[in-house]
Image (cartoon, rainbow, N blue to C red):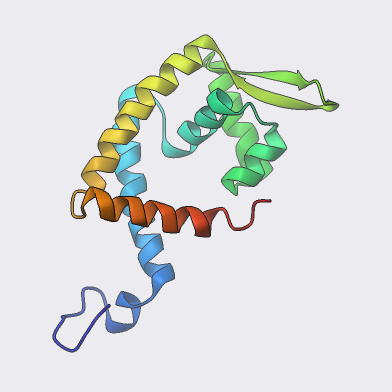
Length: 150
């Protein structure tokens, strides 16, 4: 919170605007994540798809919902990961019309390397706050980010 004795960093209005601060923090952490993931040939969005494919095995529709991306963006991301041999589309046993996206063994291995890179980038991005503060931030962001999921 900006007080009378705290100088504005961007502007008094934006310094107090939670949406602006979240967007700015997101841009900073996404850039750090993209730099770290470049070493394994991924970006934050493709990493997110790979993580869900490795841990959940969702349908493309579920990927779009969980990541809040347009389905066409999901198709392009899955296509790229599939062409690299990191994920495969499988028929959903619960719905013959749907396809799930599952990580291949190469995808699971890539995900492990990518996760380590992301962990390093997050430690760098959150260096200005303590581990306890980071845990609080994560808990608050999870409540906001997942409030629309049932």
